[in-house]
Image (cartoon, rainbow, N blue to C red):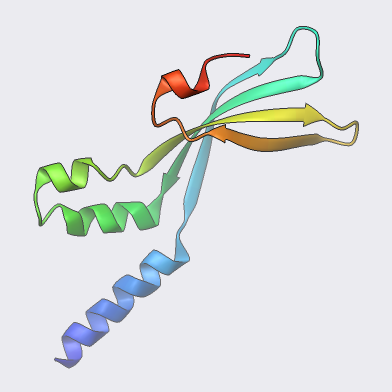
Length: 99
């Protein structure tokens, strides 16, 4: 029983630490306005751990829980830097069509 509690505690700690890697896929400047569109792919370790445990329930359950999230950002040039906000999380590309 102590081993089970120890393993569950380690799993909770790993999920809580949540490392993230962001890869910038594409950067596009607007032609006439001070806007920049950025497309990124964010990989989360915590989602990888959860997906590992979901794989015991079946491949379909794990496939429905992606570890990489595609995000589309709109950034406004403030003069001192870029002020970015997430436009959509890329569940479908149709949600994030152009300008």
